[in-house]
Length: 359
Image (cartoon, rainbow, N blue to C red; front, side, top):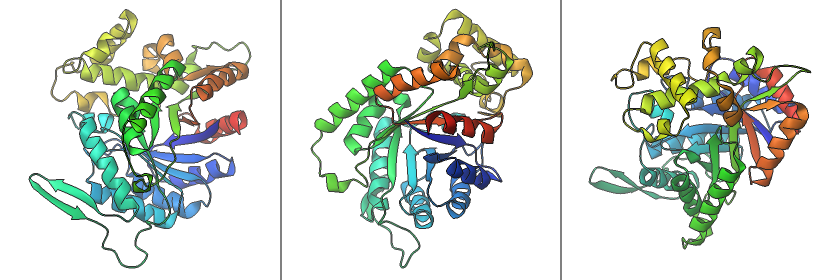
């Protein structure tokens, strides 16, 4: 299986990209969460100039964040700096929208956005709508402002499950998911994508790229001999994923209760504890300002008790070398092409561990 890394946009990110390339990793991604992290287009511009081989990904951008013309211009501009090395993940903007106190957009709008980006980034015209006004648009740049000749790879974020997989199938894209380590779930997503692709008449030339790879974002912790798999070190390495899930459950408990209702009693208790510690409630209109600071950052020691073993095992890879390789093999057999880690403790060391494990 291929290996890659996901980080937050910040000064010095290009140094991590250089190190990832030196380690032989396949891709280097930057989050697109405007109210929490820096700008991914700025960050990847620096990475593009500092590297020569590694793929550079934005994940996950959304029509709820950026218009199609603006996003396409950014992507095609990056493609001019790093020809053929750009990957763009698109989604409904779940976290990025919720950090604004807003709901994500719809699968239909996501599909229209994906189609517009594919067309624009391949140098074709596309339909663009604002309210009741619809116009055909295309790049009007002269010269080398953007690169529409080299393909850009697109993947759809699978948070919506079957709906997202169907969009990926109809648009000929890959998939990306956060913390989805269940091989059965990946088999279902791939079945849905294949079915949607077969049921949609299409001209393959209308797609930016024919690749359809699958990526999973997780964290990795290799246990030392006799180390507690749920000790402080393991919780620190995986806690950012667990707290992101608890924050999502806390944020959506009132308006979209189905997710929180799927959790067990211990997990629901942790959600209530998180709300109490952050000084907010599940119905407070400003709860997003309390739940999402330091989103996907290193957790505080006092929050380690919220990093439940059940959620660690669900969202992250913790174990001996043989344990990790066994779980990764089952994911590969389920059709996952690349394992992306989101390191927070010591990114260079964690990237080296991943490279040593998989490359």
